Length: 173
Image 1 (cartoon, one colour):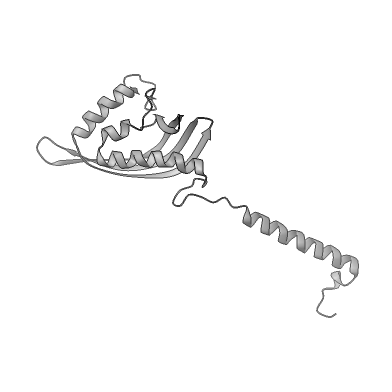
Image 2 (image 1 turned 90 degrees about the horizontal axis):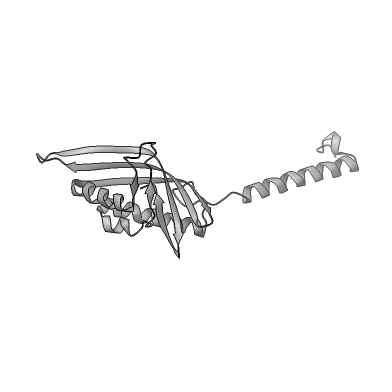
């Protein structure tokens, strides 16, 4: 018994040591198995509901890259209202305003590159909030023919509502 440390040589100390070692192993196993699975390339929990919501945002991203106004408007709820994050009312957009904005914006846009990093999805009842980081570059057609570039990199929150069986944007575009 020379290889056994002195403190666990008697039976009582040995039982306490084994109990402590067993508890430590169980705790380590439980915390290792409790790690939440994330949707690949996101910081969002991998659940069917989160995937369903992110599919709609991805449809928007793909439509925006194609400059497809009709495709974007198909994803927007008729009660869409966006305050653009400001207190001014002159930059607020409702559904009709969004329609006009997209048609004029895409008329002068030659190309769009857009990457969205999904940070968080929170679903409460029929409403979902999606926190993202957007990195986009817009190439505009200048009247003289030369391209004009504009880069946007910012945090963005999309709000969607479940309309029957379809998620639609309420704000954030």
